[in-house]
Length: 412
Image 1: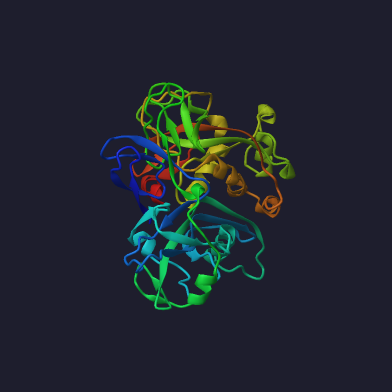
Image 2: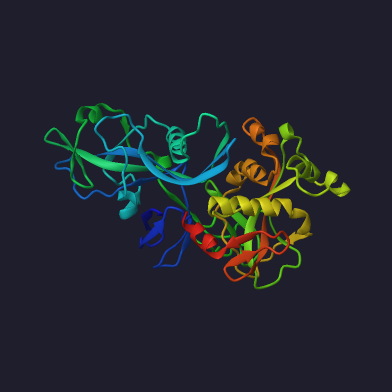
């Protein structure tokens, strides 16, 4: 489930409810669109139901939330698991180790300097909690099994705060009003006030080139201008251009799905060209002479879907890229499926696409951990998918994605 977050419009103050994945927010009252921005991870407070007496404020206990897909490559093959976990980020006995279902059942609020609270400092880093969750979720490794590579893709890491307060020498959970243990440790723990970099800021959704209003799905990471057809993605407090293309000769009426085209080499596996990739993965075809001059391009879905479908789509399009033909500059003439996977995480997925594509795992799997992927260029390409009843099929490469898989991938 996605977290629900209360949000006020910076223009008119109108209230609205967004999900944790929303970055382009439209006010239901004044219609103004804006991008959300924060430095680092997003931070939320579980709204309290009981307030402390007197002038004392809340103490907020930090919890790390990780949501994403964990992939593991081992001698037993490729395994994957979608993980959604919330774990305490301080070593204080007596506090709840997890928030349970409360974050999903309640509407959270962004951390704000207006909220009367002090925040306990984390003693555990997000990577420690994520790594622990990954090993628990993927299951135990057998004595004879060797783990070669572990990767996190499509991940969302955020900090959730549980407000507590002191009453009659007891620590009270301000959400469910229960009494907690560990009161001395809580008050002796290092704390801080709300920091400026934690607070959400807003960026007007206007095209930097022509000034037109930008529009798109709330969860999209790339917005295409309807007026000048330029692509933009948020970077800090500004929008930076994104090169995007389409396959020449696209038929109208197709579903346009985005893929990150990543020009990359893997020296440890002698992969520099497309011919190298064919030989390394032992594909049942003879590399053409022109493929020795064709730089290797990995094609990674730019949207989140179930892990197995994600790897299959990347494998089919990467292997069948020579069938795509020429690419041309994109012109926004129809609805484009939203980009929900950033290019940085697509680059992290290259090893997994390679692992899924190989027909001889023993020649690839043992070298994945040490192999360095060198990405020299990236661009966004929308590929046409034809309606085949219950599935969408890419006619050039044969990649197939189920309609329900694509639909529910938006909520992962």
